[in-house]
Every structure is written in structure tokens, then in C-alpha cells.
Length: 125
Image: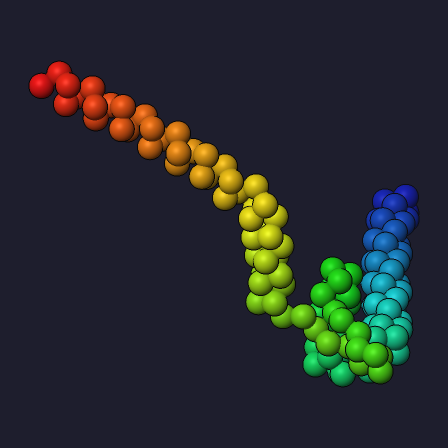
């Protein structure tokens, strides 16, 4: 019986040790997250407020390059509409160079073919 009790006690102690270890790791992880948030608050807090964004959104937009800085150093977030307009303008500028010329050539070729077909039909009747 003493062997059985000692074995159960060892199992119980191992479970308790694992539980305490998990709690300690969770506590360390939470402390790490808090330190990260504090560091972000110090680095980006003022700039994010000036841009009118939360810190997490400010960091995301900064990574993507969606924030412009004025000469005095104040940040301004570029809206999605402005980004879409800029992309559309870039695409239109690149398409204008080659796109219209091809279209004219295609239209001219189709026009010749249609007129020839019509003439053939008329001559057969």
C-alpha cells in the first residue's frame, strides 16, 4: 500500500508541477505582451494620435506605405479611396500608350472584313 500511495503522490505532484509551470509561462507571456504594448505606445502613440488612428492601424499603414509625412513631421493617413484613385490613374496612364492604338487597328481590320462580306452577299443576290 505504501508503494501505491507514493506512486499516486508522485503523479499528483507531477500534475501540480505542470500546472504551476503553465501558469508561470502564461504570466511571462502576458508580461511580454504588456511590455510590447508599452513600447509601441511610446514609439507610435503621439504619431498615431496626430494621424487620427489607433496604434495597431498606424503600424499597419506605416508598413504598407499608406502614411505621408508633411514637412513639419506630422503624419497623414492616405485613405483607401485615394489609393484606388492613384492605382487607377497609373493603370490608365500605362494603358493609354498602347491600348488605344491596338483598338484602332482592330477596329480598322474588322471594318474592312465586314464591308467585304456585305459586298459579297449583295453580289450573290
